[in-house]
Image (cartoon, rainbow, N blue to C red):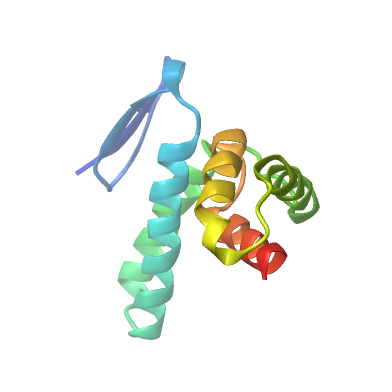
Length: 123
């Protein structure tokens, strides 16, 4: 199993996915990176240091391809703007806000952080 990023050069880790960097927006590496972070936590909780170390090594490779993430303050500003634009004022409209925010921030912010901010602003 290999993840291969192509940019004239290849980097390999042991998760399955192939991405061409000419069309690359970072979301693939974010998804793989998120899975690896959870895997590391679970392996460490289970006391499997060998598997945890392997996942950490893969994460180290993936991190080189992750886009720079927006700060929480920057995300907050985008969320507030999206809430105004959609006229959202309740949790029932969270999907509308999240759709707009996700389009604007594709690959630039952690999805769980975005969802938490939207939820906090709509409650």
